[in-house]
Length: 107
Image 1 (spheres, one colour):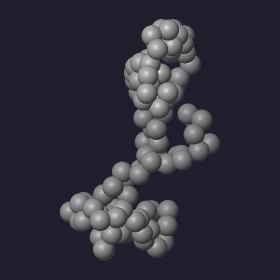
Image 2 (cartoon, rainbow, N blue to C red):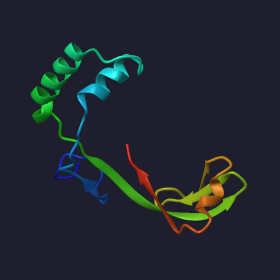
Image 3 (tube, helix red, strand yellow):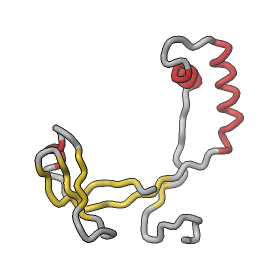
């Protein structure tokens, strides 16, 4: 375990990320976009303000080498794996053909 409490020793950790939630968008998401009654928007606003200090978002990531693109698949080589990892991206995989590295989030 690293000093910051994460089991990722050599990976960058993003902290101090700001999250802005729109109360109306929250209510619309809960109602599947159909309606946002004002009384629920007010309640959501109050709840979001109350919870603001409870969130400490973080993200861990690593850069991995793009080895090649073949058909609809991108092959990546990570320092943690001996063999390239094939990632099925579909018909737009060719957009990665000039990439040297890709950003991967880590669990």
